[in-house]
Structures are given as C-alpha cells and as structure tokens.
Image (tube, rainbow, N blue to C red):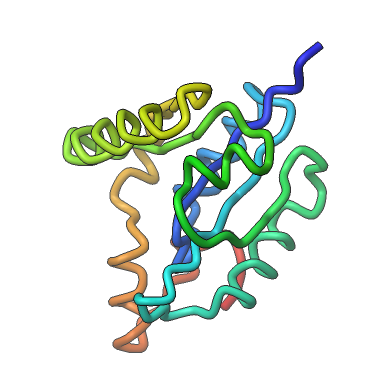
Length: 151
C-alpha cells in the first residue's frame, strides 16, 4: 500500500489558525503531512524560521501524522525529495484560487507526479492572513486570536 504523503508549503510568517485548520483537515485525507517552511534568503522574515518551526512543532506535538521541515528552492523538487505526491493549499477566496492555480500548473509541469489538492478555508478563518497578522504585530497589537500558540 502506498503511503499518501502531502506537503503543505509556505513561508508561515507566522503560522495562523487558518493554516492550522488546513493541516487538521488535511490529516484526515493523508497518511502524513509535512509542513514545509520555505526559506527564501532574499526575503526578510518577521519571525525567524527557527522560532516558527518550534512553534509549529509544539502545535502538532500530539499528531504523529504531522512533521515540520525547512527547505530552500523549488517546492516541486522538495516534494520529490521527501516522497510527497500531493501538495495541500488553502484557499480563502477567488484571488487565492487564481494565484494557486497557476502555481499548481507549474509545479505539475516540473514534477508530473505531484497533485495539488485545494482545501477551502472555513469561513471563521477566511479573513486571517499572515500579512495582516505581521502588520498587527509591527504596531504592537494583540494577535492571540489569530495564532494557535503564544508568541
């Protein structure tokens, strides 16, 4: 029997309750989910990769299906390296779909064994974005409502 391994890639700067929702729901569909924190050396992160990896690992410490890894380079190649044949992507709205659809097609071109699975974000999380959470953090606001852990 083939193990269904899914990669959930992103910068996760920070990892939000919306992301948590996608991983929890994805873990009912797949045998293993690898949360891949993409390291883009040309981008300045707000929260360090080391801290974010630790926070996400703590969040899923009781779920043996979930593993957290850091990667650099193309998502499609990383998926191949770790044996993932599925990518999970969360969609909040049609704008997300347009963007993610294009990326899914390119990923499939680069790795034709890779299938992208879109999960629609639950309405109570649809307004949450890492960009907005970072902006709130920059100005000293409280983001506890948006994150599944304490910063």
